[in-house]
Length: 523
Figure 1 (spheres, rainbow, N blue to C red):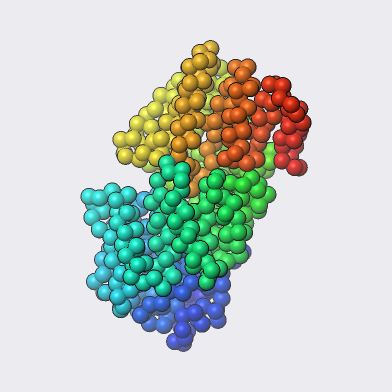
Figure 2: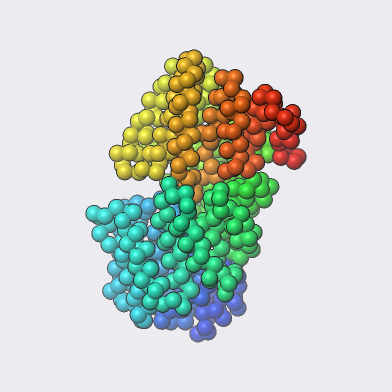
């Protein structure tokens, strides 16, 4: 699937002064990334570039959006919204916070937009909002500045209620600041309500469907996002992230084949863009897709396909230093070993590539260390398991010291689970149960990060397996069923539930065992 963005941009710069939407329609650029209506006071050529860049921004195609906004600034040096767009392209609200270099560049662009001054009151409000995020970055933390940006967007939305783009950007800000511990999903529902208003008028708006998927990417809400998931790739077929995002909903609902198709298309598109342009964002979009692919193949029991994904990841020798890369590089090997119960392979895992800056991504390294600890404990090598546990504790403490309470909590879940299985290996059954239940309860109290399709092994699933190992199948059964309530179709939870039912003598247990695998899976 080829993108013609560079050709489109060149044509736009030399095109006659047509209205922005007409320019997009004539050359097809907007059709490949989705259409938005974002009026500016910039020249016609710059306005066309800004509008297409906004569509790319809504699909988190940040590298391409920044490039187009930069070209708009060249086309019209007095276009404040071009510099606003550069600053927005460096924010990455649902991803990791911008590093110091990106913060400096974004702040420079935001301040330049303010110095130029928007041509309308509305434009000045957009510029003020992005400056609220970058202002005082040297002394205010990311969360505080994200809240300041949301407040500014709330004011903009209230001042210009007919501006649909203001509604969409405001909805994203509301969703971004949702606390992961809020199981009422109040902010996600509020964001979706805002987006639904725009959807009734602009059903093919790329930001609307994208942010609806993110708003509904939760077990209790996922079914509400299925329509958006099945439309997004058709709306923005040139954007790898738009091809991938539907799989967030497909995986939540156990629609493994659709998730696989989504990520195969993503990986192919990203590989083509990377080969043509050397794009770093395409490289990590491909790695991100491979993590989701490995997960889906393993749920179908297609170990051969999952092994091919593992080989693709192992072949990566150079990856962009972003969380998506780090997570996939660590998660795919860990998933492949742990989902298959290959404890010796798990115990032997090491982070790779060795020269990747793992010290910046402690949470990603922790997955490898967790797999090593769990694999060693379940192989009976308690000494190696305890060595891995000590490293896991150090990684948790590093995250805690850095104030990263989300990932600190995720690594604590892994630490509790690893220690539970160490106690199990030592014959301390009651202690093992208490630790494993604490891990499961802690995991239930939060939500997965958007970077991942799910934990490399759910804590409550591991609790069910521990109870089975201790000969307590009647207690294990509800644990597996609780996993399936949140993650329909998870292979190990289905197998565990059927095995627990059969061992506990639950009526129909043998039939449940036979029906435990998805259709077409090896038995």
